[in-house]
Image (cartoon, rainbow, N blue to C red; front, top):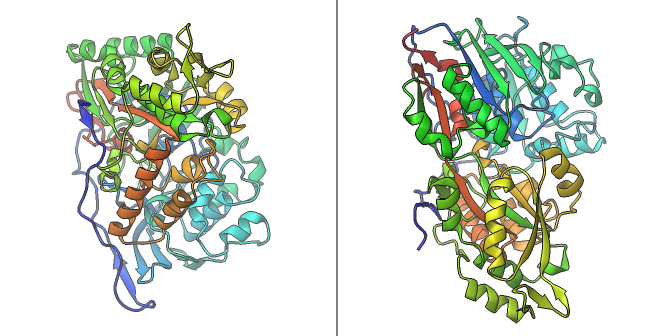
Length: 560
C-alpha cells in the first residue's frame, strides 16, 4: 500500500456555472476583491534566489520561468484567487452572456504604465493580436488559448488583418465574441499579461525578442515592481512601483538572483541564505530536502513547505516500435517502485497524482484512476506476453536483441534517474542514463522527437486551469509522446466546451482513466516545494509557490 500524501483524487462538489435563460441575456460577474489588509511595514529590500527567464516578454515565452516572474511587473485582466478562480485585475468586472459566447470587460480607469502613460482597451487588443500574430512562433501555445475567439485562427494563419471578435467599445471597455464556449477563458486567456501598445506598436513581432523592452530596463508594465536592470544569468533588480493602482508595495525593492539546481549552485544559495546575502528562495530554486532540517534550526531563517510546482514523470516515445504495445509500458510502470522514490529522494514529502492535473485543481482529479506500481513479477509476466524473457545476464532479450534503452532528460532526471535505472534493472531493463541541461535536451532531442524515453517534469502548479498543459503536452497530434487516442482528444476538447463544472469533472475523470491504462507516461510524484526565508520577513501563506510569489507586493519585514 502506498503511503504518504497519495492524492489519486479528491472529489469536490460539482459547481454548476452554466446560466439559465435566453442566449441574449447577460450575467454580471463582480468577484470579491482579494486585497490583503494594509500594513504600515514599509521599507527594505529582498534578494530572492530564482531561476531566470530567457525573456521578460510574457507573450513570447510560455515557459515556467517567465510565467512565475512576469506577474511582478505585468498584469492580466484577471488574476487567480486562492482557489484558482478568476479575480479582477486590470478588469474591475465583466459580463458574460448566458450562452457563454460574449464577454464584456470593464477595465480600470486608474491604471498607468510604468512610464506614466494610461492603460486602455487598445493595450488589450494589441496584446492579444501580438500573441496570435503569425510571426510570433514562440508564443503559439499562448495563442491556443484564444483559438475560440472569433477571427483568431484566421489572424494566426495570416488570412485576416485583425481578430474580428475583439471589439473596443470605449477606452475602458472591451467585448470579446467567441465561436464556441471555452470554459477557462477567464482564468487562462484573460489572465495573460497585457503589454503597452505605445511601446510596441512600431516593433515588428519578429523583432520583439531582441528589443530592449523584452530584455531589461526597457520593460514597461503595470505591475507592482519596476525593472531597473536585468543582467542575464545574474540578476533582475526591481524597485517598488509607487503609482501601482492597489498602492505601493511594502518593499522598496526586490532582486531576483539567478541560480540553478546543479549541486554547486544549490550549495551556494543555501550558504547565501544562511549569511543573509539572500533573504528568500522558492519555486524551482526552493530549499533542497536535504537542507530542510538545517535551515529549520537556523534562528535567522524559517521554512514553509507547500505542494510542489512540478510532477516528475517519464515519457515514452510511442513512435518507437518498442513502446507501441501497451503491455510494455504497463510493465515498466509495474517495475517502478514509487514509494521507494518518495522515501529515498524526498523524505516522504511528496504528493502523488496519477495524471496530468495538479492538486490545486482537486475538483478535477479522479480518485478511481488505476495505477500499475511495484510488482516486478507482474512486469516480467507482461514482458513475457510480448516475447521478452530474462537472459542469463539478467537482461530481457527477444530474437537476439536486448531490452536496452537510452533514458535522456533534464529538469529532475539527475535526481530520480539513477533510482529508476536500478529499479528497472530488477525487471531486466538495461538503461543508459543521460542527464542534460535544458537547452541541450529540449530543442534538439525532445521537441525534435528524437527521444526514446524522456525524463521531464510538468510545472503545472503555475497553471490556473487543468486545460493549460493539455494542448502541448497531451493532446493527440500536438504532443511529443505520439500518444494518439481519439477518445482522449475528444475528452480534452469537450472538457473546455462547457461552463458546467460537474460536466467538466466527468470528462476529466474519464480522460485520466484512459491515460492511466494507456500509460503514455509514468507519473512519479510532486516533491514538496520548501520556501526558505529570513525569520523577520512576513510572506502571506498560500497553497502553492506560484500564488506565493504573486503576493510579493505584500511581503514586509516586521522588525526592521
